[in-house]
Length: 252
View (cartoon, one colour):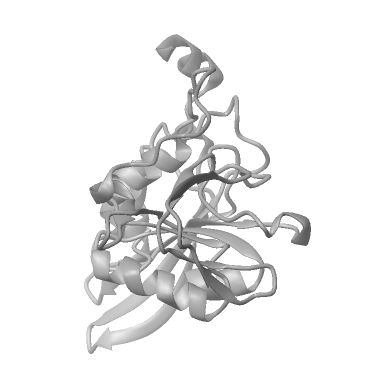
């Protein structure tokens, strides 16, 4: 979330993570993709241009495909896919989460079950170089071994001025029926003024989550003003923030 031009996304991808990154600013997403290609991790960084809450909902919602559907339809141009100047659709690469991948599945190119229409788009070939498509055709991609609605390891919320306000995006989004492994670590950046305490920030975060956090950790990043510092609040997403299997079945 709030991926910007990739200060977290690209280094994570360089360490072998699959990264889903979102930013509401289309220029940020453009340069995020450029940075990923320059650093030769374009096949690991999936970028979305969406509202942050819609992005979390989109990634965490278990898809329901009809039998005749060959791929999952990507969101429209304002919700995570961009169009080239000649009308071709470029599937967005993304960050919310950094999911560790093995070298055997590092060839996963695009978001889960998405399709891409080639029309002069730049991609990576097997030798690490780039190639340009000359024909307009529809391609499907093998989904990564780990899907975001089944598991993510970390969620980085790099918007200290207001990231706390977006913690409610996780409420009820994870379905335990499909989730595999531990719940993700949330890394929420925030500002703490001299008149505020860590306890106050924790209470604000828990209010947004609707659940108690277990053993939250504060990391002081830097001072931004004489009476104001930037911190990173890290905690594992509380189980109460998940949708139970019973609730999920009732909703169906």
